[in-house]
Image (cartoon, rainbow, N blue to C red; front, top):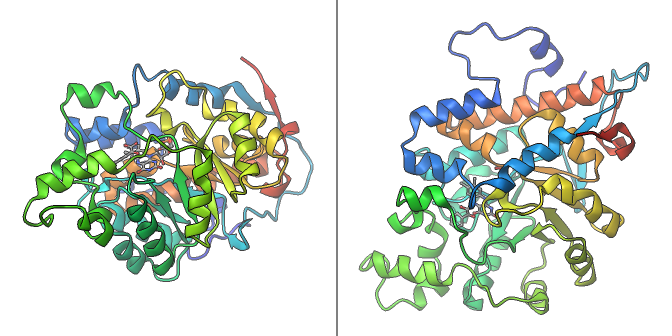
Length: 388
Ligand SMILES: Cc1cc2nc3c(=O)[nH]c(=O)nc-3n(C[C@H](O)[C@H](O)[C@H](O)COP(=O)(O)O)c2cc1C
Ligand SMILES: O=C(O)C(=O)c1ccccc1
């Protein structure tokens, strides 16, 4: 029977529903509804919304439901292995927390609560460049627990360099360079609600504490916060980047580099050619290019192109354990969880994030077992069929 560290044994947990009347939700839709109740319009829609008419958000979900699992029987699934090895380190499960900025808009403890929940679960936490709290503070809260750093590649190379150095110095073990957000997309909800968290000073924790960033300001952020934020809006993303610039990242960090936001097989090929260590197939949860391909739909073609040369991870649209099984069967080595954890955070802080991660892990483990599979390493495309 699977045992996840200090957590419940999930089979027992599953067969004996928790009778506590104060228990947290189990159903994804219920978490989202509860988050809607506790949050104001601005923050709720900032998290829940996507770009444009949210076609890509829908495409993400549709892609998962189009692939069907074809379970196998009589295959001894008593002992199972859901661990995964990445860059020489073994992780207990293939789940990670997606990099998410501005978490303080939905819970006062923000990133600290999420990072602590991950540390307890031994789930890697990916600190966003746009975190409310500085990366060092988050690292401090995590002890030796696994953590990666997500880089928004600043227009100012000195800031990018400084972020890479700070991440290395504070115990992050990989760099996730997000490529799909050189600028913020057309997000209708946020325009309607006149709500952009960074304009009210959220998500700039890494910047206002950065010597390279502050060196370019006329006055300190303390003296003139508005100018500091304006400088951030003009520099946080860098639309001038090309593949040639990957060399700069490689020169400035010794950590493994993953590129996040890859959707085209040709880009996956370029990533391999440019010597990066991994890619994350993602459409940013449908928050950047509306009309873009569902992330799960992009995954098989990319895995065919990469041919196991480097690990391919994925995110966008994972809501249940079966979604994780499908992503792994289509070639993902691990998956990043976004909004489900954020609804957990909004509803119940650290405990909520932990609960969501636990439930997703249990659901994934049971789905894999019931499909006749014992190990996530053995999940193959042959357990799936595509049906409209
Ligand atoms: C509120 C919010 C903030 C996000 N901030 C970042 C970020 O700072 N950096 C980044 O690479 N991705 C960011 N993302 C995208 C996530 O890392 C991830 O790609 C996406 O949430 C996955 O889709 P899902 O929410 O459907 O699981 C953000 C997503 C949300 C919902
Ligand atoms: O909202 C997002 O999706 C995102 O990636 C972001 C970018 C900059 C600041 C905060 C969040």
